[in-house]
Length: 223
Image 1 (cartoon, rainbow, N blue to C red):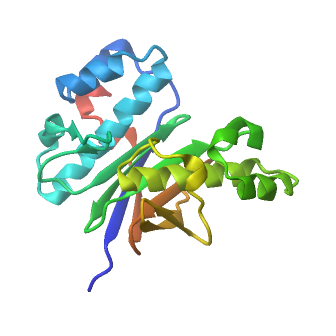
Image 2: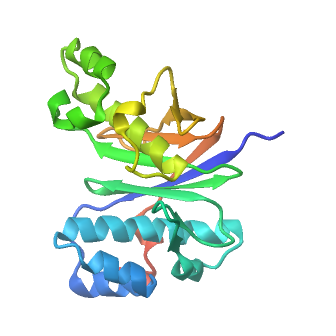
């Protein structure tokens, strides 16, 4: 049996887009997505979510769907997005970068965080006692803390439960973690040296990473 594959598409931006460019890019999305994105006050948050959706739009034709299938995006009861007839996918965004993982024969969960100073106390409610002790023993726990957080959240996204479960009960060990009775494989994905990124899948999966320039992500008329 072939090992399932996950394609990860990623893109970043450096500056705020002109208002006209933002509006024309939003027009590529369905009304519900447009309304959700417009509710964010910070331009960074609006663009991050828009780029995440555009990455999914870029990926759909490779799986036999028109880009406009993005308009059919719905959410499960637990909050996980899906498109009927499309493969399972997961989107994450942080800083100035977005990622979209699309699974072929597997349901992916992905999370992304920029590397930054962080102390275990900042995420105390998400850490089990054994995790807090392990982090306290490290001279610089920030990177390990972010790695641990992305592992937990990516597994919850693959499970479809989001942050509805107690993160203290989700304890990654040796590249695996159990969530709701299912074991998930955890893979570190180097999308950018300034970020920590983790992919979770219920079983082994190969990974193909593609950096998508904005010149490809956006139609020429928008640039």
